[in-house]
Structure formats: C-alpha cells, structure tokens
Image: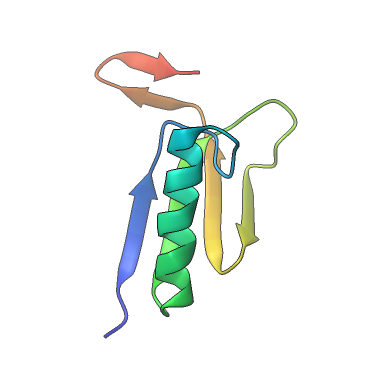
Length: 71
C-alpha cells in the first residue's frame, strides 16, 4: 500500500543539524519505500520555494504555529 505523507518540520531540510538530518532520513527513507512524501519545511534565504530531491517533494515557506513565526 502506498501512503501519501505530509511531513512538517520547523528545521531547514535537508540540513546539517540533528533535527534536520533526522527529518531528512525519515522522509527520504519513506520515499525509497515507495510512499509519496511531501516535506513542508522552513525556507532559508536564497532557497527555492519548491523542489524535489531523492523522491521527496519539498515545499519551503515561513511557518507559523501557535501565533509565532518559525524563522
């Protein structure tokens, strides 16, 4: 069975710190198993709004949660 998965992360993914490395490992691992993975993640300066890497669709934006903006 193929799942459609939306993974939301306040980290900039892919990245170099623990949280972003873990998020990327899970998202790309699920994609390798044939699932349709969309990753909604924080946008850093100069990054495109949308892309795809290793079968993971990546959407980047400024995230707001509980009235706060995740930079």
